[in-house]
Amino acid sequence: MQTRSKSGIVKPKLGYAVQVDYSTTEPTTYSVASKHPQWCNAMNEEFQALQKQGTWTLVPCSFFQEHSWLQNAFLHGTLKEEVYMAQPPGYIDPTHPSHVCRLQKSIYGLKQAPRAWFESFTSQLLHLGFIASTADSSLFIYTNNTVIAYLLLYVDDIVLTSNTPAYLDHLITQLSTVFDLKDLGIICWIPNLPSLPVAPTPDSLYMKVTLYPDPHGYRSLVGALHYLTFTRPDISFSVHQVCQYMSAPTTIHLAAAKRILRYLRGTLHHGIAFTPGPLQLSAYTDADWAGDPDDRRSTSGYLVYLGSNPITWSAKKQPTVSRSSTESEYRALAIASAELCWIRTLLKDLGIYLSQTPILWCDNVSALAIASNPVFHARTKHIEVDFHFVRERVLRKDLEVKFVSTIDQLADIFTKSLPTQRFIDLRRNLMVSVPVIEGGC
Image 1 (cartoon, one colour):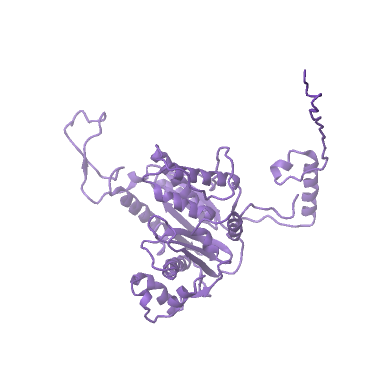
Image 2 (tube, rainbow, N blue to C red):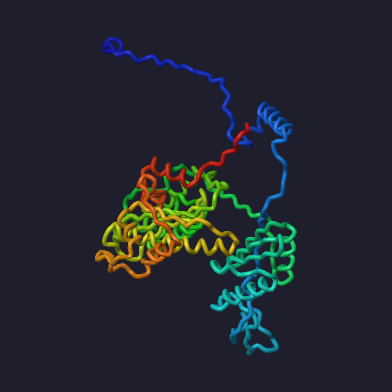
């Protein structure tokens, strides 16, 4: 009998080693540190030392924010037209079963309802001393001596902010006497995503194409992601991509949307950190020429800063095909210049006047030459007249266009998919990062 030992086959002996690390990991958040007595003692000692040195004093916030909701908003509008409707089934008046309802107020389903509600609410605000902003019809401003208040209306949601909390309470009380107003308290929203594997970037790769059987679910998911881009500029381009396939989504597009969710899962605590500084308005503009393989249209992107803080951004496909990279970059310049002009108007409504001319940063020398030089160019004669808006603004000294290298082009993140490290670097420049508490445990 031939055995393994006789054949020289020996089963290897496995050895195991265990190493115990007694080093203590420093907690990164207060909630983690508060669960350990030794860290609680250290935090208490540090806090007592800070109080002893008079490190800070408690002062009220300069502006207080409140969130309110108007119940049955569309029912508050007064109709100007003569509108009739049938009595609702189950609630027909037994004494007049053949009669119809002549509407005195607006009701859900009427095309006039949104405008009637807005006019009713606006007239009440004007009666209370508010002034409508010329830059945004849903923004209302109140100033009286030292009291400043801003009210932003979105359908039936109200955001209030003021430097005087007593006036906020007074305003809510006044509005409640006219409308069915529900005070939701201080603005607070906490996202909650299920457990998902994380992704380093929100962009994904293509795979086998199959029509997705539930387009409604896809649209709902993408709509929620689009809403999130208001505070997460780092996902703007990815969401812009998946938004283009709402009518007939495939498994590719669903996988791309799910990858954005996995990316968000790994960056839940990321946010924009606003810092004080000089009020200089500037914008970065970029374009990806013929980047869409389906229709060869370019994607424009811009990022607007007020001081060192990003305040608005966009990733959007251009309406027509550009014949050159210069043309696509020039169109992006025009779009960003219009946004800068609108922001200046909005800041004036808020009582903020800029002493310095806004700057547009672009990485295409030819596009800058076209914007700065009003001389007729044969290669630009086909460009729509409205895109030459940027020329007029530059000539009037309302804007200043400057060159920035491609490496320093911050709007690059809004026009194309990027390698991981490049994406992370640009995301850091967007000031999207994990909040850090300095000087503590």
